Image (tube, rainbow over all chains, first blue to last red):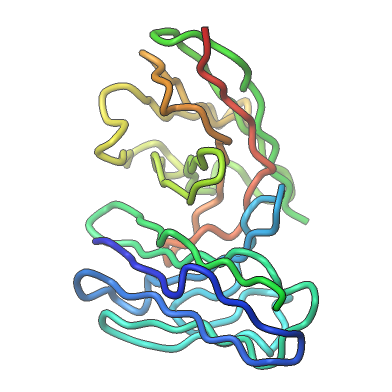
Length: 107
Length: 118
């Protein structure tokens, strides 16, 4: 299964709302869809699993939604620390795939 | 707090081999399903291999099947990735990641850099 994230780069200002898309080449179980944040020089950090469940310690401005082939990560009001790269990830048929990432940059 | 530490990276020539290691603290290693994931410079994340807690299930990405071997020693608390027949495209940061029952990566190490170079 190929995951395609859009846009490739998203330029927004602090306080704005960010909407990141992850589209799968075939149906993905929402149980097995996750989102990660990666800052420069750091390891990825789990944000969302099972499409919409926030991981421990993740602020409620982060939310996930979607089903089937279309999934969305929304950041309701951007904080300066949210500017990073975001990846979606799915599991199916004993393998894992990641999307290519969306870079969220300060406008 | 869960902490994961990878080691064993470095520079190796094309055709060479490397063995990466990973330790985890803050959770019971022998109960943890584990993975290796890599990231080439400036690129995205690529899942490589999975091993269940008791080593009964092992899966590989098609791209590395036959060249990479994942294994673990629960008595020593160590996870391994053996990389053979190194290629230029194996240059990357290699991460060890703890897998959860719903197949997401809850905990990650800081990674170990592998550079394939003459």
